[in-house]
Image (spheres, rainbow over the protein chains, first blue to last red):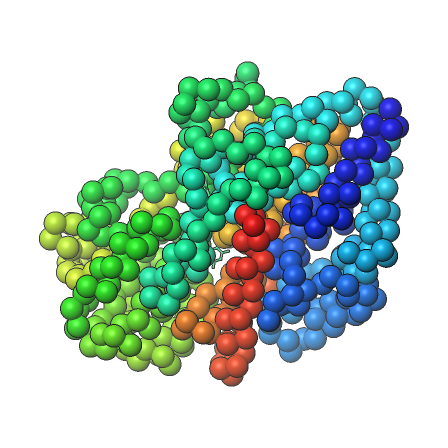
Length: 97
Length: 425
Ligand SMILES: Cc1cc2nc3c(=O)[nH]c(=O)nc-3n(C[C@H](O)[C@H](O)[C@H](O)COP(=O)(O)OP(=O)(O)OC[C@H]3O[C@@H](n4cnc5c(N)ncnc54)[C@H](O)[C@@H]3O)c2cc1C
């Protein structure tokens, strides 16, 4: 039975490695929160940064800087203001390298 | 993907597994064999089907979509303005089929929530354990007197992208110099709150280039609109007095359309147009009503945490069809609601309670083909309702330098590429 559980939990992860499947990779809070990110940050564009390969510490620092920069007017500034330290940490650990 | 990222994903998955290991063998077997049907292959439905296929690779995922191709509404106002082709808006379902999703080209005509069956217009039935509806909007024909499918040939809505978009574009092209374009905007709620005003901006841009003596009048059934200050500043800056906006209290609200005479009637007077775009009253796609998920407002009340219908158990509703205010009816919202809903459905099938989280939205609108403005919001969905997070969200800064708005135009283009890739490619 454990084995069945393993299979169900691992297949999405394996599919993720192939680079074909789209969508959340888990069913926990990390997956729920990062559902907000992937619609824009799929890969790098010319004006929206891709997140693949960014170290988690760098990502966390960037998100905190967006949130705490009171004068910032970009969409990312306005959205970052809605997240707690804990949420930003979890997002960074999930998406960061 | 780097080895470190993979390990991190693995750890995240293992923490999920920690919960999974508590499940009974029977509930795990149910998860594996689960049948999930998604109706509607737009931004909501296509994203939901793909997310479920990834989360539940052993389950059977069926996507029911009436059309062979999807024509995206976001960026379709650029097509109207003649600066983008409709092909760039058009997406097939082959990538979804290649991922093991059974894509059924048919229209869902009925839902029996007791036997948990969806009926299709080819008379087949599909059984489900969980049903996700993402049917978008239906135009509420007749709710505006005189506006029916025939009138929409003379006065296109172009609020579902495709033939209607091209029809309105042709009419704008054919309009004589010095002509009058009328736009009628229905009372909120409607799909894409800033969409009518983005459209007015881009049509004015086309007129300025090709028919500089033409005029555009917006007859509005609302007294205020999304990003109003920014739009009106852009209109003055780029289009002078070409655009006139008449609010509801200024007798702007259209009460009758006369397609033969090419006239719109308000409480106060009658306006004749050479080209008339009617953005008509809307409601949830008809299948949502057939499923019993629609209330007296014409839209679907949901539990904001799980996206399960407040009226019909086992049926989840996402996207434009839902009552999700303060989350707007946008492709951004539909795509994200789809991912969150897919996770909650996977949790429910695994015997876990849906988990509240935080969602966000940004809607970009072009004010010229190169520059855009945006509005953002962040929402918590605990206790089954969406609540805007105080202090977050809001619109682009007023009076920002042109390079800021050009940057937002580039961000919008990147957003379109990313979201259509996640949903369709
Ligand atoms: C002019 C315009 C500009 C816009 N710009 C933006 C923008 O810049 N950013 C943004 O975020 N949003 C924008 N939007 C809004 C966006 O298009 C919608 O919010 C989004 O499409 C909603 O997704 P959905 O999945 O709810 O519905 P849809 O995308 O409409 O998908 C519904 C699908 O379900 C299918 N369907 C319906 N009923 C059935 C049935 N019974 N059986 C089978 N299939 C069925 C339909 O064929 C359709 O493919 C814009 C809209 C307009 C009109």
